[in-house]
Length: 75
Image (cartoon, rainbow, N blue to C red; front, side):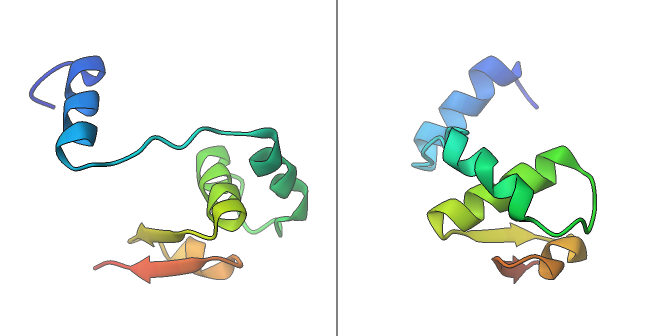
């Protein structure tokens, strides 16, 4: 990154009109419902949020295709 993350990320979020997404108890409650396909905790939380908010995940990682979420596969 051209600047420290605490400076660069907020500037880019504002520039590209990207809203933050907090991690909530409702999101975390989805963890117990996920199939045990893989153990990456960060990926699993992204999946939980996508389920909770009915959002699409954009990724190059095929593992997301195994979960009950909408995925836009990028090359």
